[in-house]
Length: 460
Image 1 (cartoon, rainbow, N blue to C red):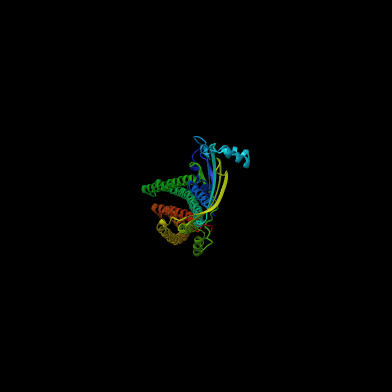
Image 2: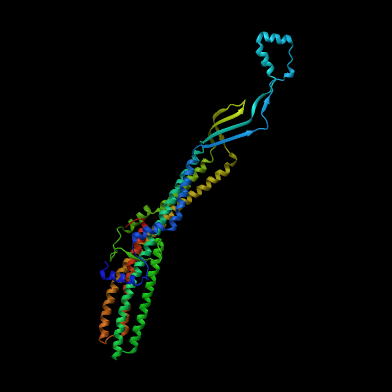
């Protein structure tokens, strides 16, 4: 656990590097990840893909329903259509025939008979029609249902791809967060190194003035001071770069002076899973596995759809017609029937297409094996990186203890004129390097820990 003096030192370094008027903002890893996920252009770019897949699935579902069509029209003819049922010029009755018909059928029939020669309007000059038709696919439902399943798998695959991207983005933010923590630690380490070399330089100058050492001791100390000051400037540049990177990922101004907060124990905790359990979890939880599996389902559904294309098309038909303006056509009529269509000329082409899609199924099965192998290797590497980082922590902790003791001894010897300035400066440099190595190793461990979380798609 960082003690109060170390925290105060880091805070002082951070505030000293803050330009006048810049905004200082504390940020935890959780907040950085939340804001980074909300801001990520990569995730926002992927959302339309999910929405598109959802619309295509809905469209495939609607395709299984009846096809409804409506036709309506109005016609204005050059003239009304009239038909003469009887040619009056060819009907010639004698007075006796007329008298006989009148006696037998009455006067009205004679009038009716004479009216047959007048043209009858059978279609008006203006006609109109409305036709409503519903066609329900029957045998194509097999292919349509397969296409619906394929679009459903595509939608789920798009969602899983977004989850995989989110895991990657969360890790990138965590990586930048710990780089900022590490860079701040390095500024603290190099600041301490500057103070140590300055103290030695002061001693070397006093010894030189007393005639106890030569001018070369002072020059070596000044050179060492310039070197550690350069290291400090590099650390500050690392802080600025990591801070800007984290700010951009969070979607806030790059000029914001972020101060990372959080409790990161030293030594850090061990993961709760062993390597075998980590691999097992990754294979069951990583969205990439399910995403590839969904692509396999898409290939299977596409294969089934091509099989359905070989079947003759049978569809139910309902048609209702409303027609006005004609004497010889009913105003309202409807029928229910069925249609059969079979384009057997393309049967060979459809069979070859089915075989082609079958190759996609084989490809999808191999892709599933491949992604599982990649994930296994990813977890293996992440696990080894974590173990290596912990080993580096142990080494650098021992190196710090050794360098501190060595510097204590050579400093006293130098003060007693039994050690050279070179030995003191080497001791100070070794201690600075050991502390810097430990700072890097500590947050490298937490970065590796976050990477293992990404690899296993969960917390450890």
